[in-house]
Length: 259
Image 1 (tube, one colour):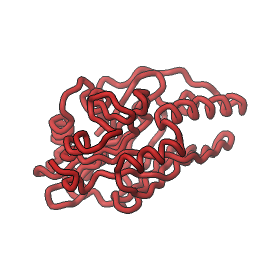
Image 2 (tube, rainbow, N blue to C red):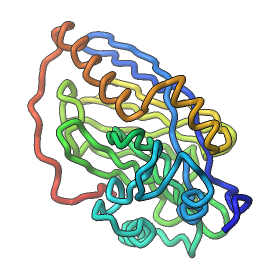
Image 3 (cartoon, one colour):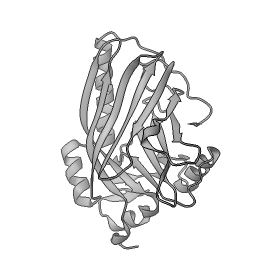
């Protein structure tokens, strides 16, 4: 496969924001970058880039064991089977993963998003793959019963998975998103017993996925997974200082995906 075969994979760079409203305000905004890779283009990316590899050591890597079934198996059969359980058939359409790369082997992925398109080009589902700092993970599937997933729908899910030790489990998520293009935005409103407790979101701009763009971005922001891990713990200290109640971890649900 030639480098010209890469048409959809790209680098997204922008900001992540968190705005906690109750019981005390805590806000932050940080620079962030993500890989956005078409599963059908992984082979050519691996062969055509010097600093990026799939399942091989390099400065920037993706590991199949970090996502999907997490056993090193191919991602496409896993995502197709997951979608089928919700009645979503892509008819062979593309799937693209938005996630942090490993940098120098370090891995931590607070949330990754699988954008799932029908063969006709329409977006049919987004799977939000969430990890916490305790080593647990859970998925939330956003879909419209197999029909087009329009941004105006604003899918909702009951919270099923312990993420922050400062937010109770009795919560409801409302997702807002745009389709991936030159810009990409996605946010989650976290409602607890009615009131809006937290808004978290990303706002990103597309750049070509090349060795040069990856290296320049990493030099600017640092290794993304390590940066995210450190900043999450720094914000936890700020929240503790504001005397917001600590909530012990609850085990993840037996079902890996909330539909």
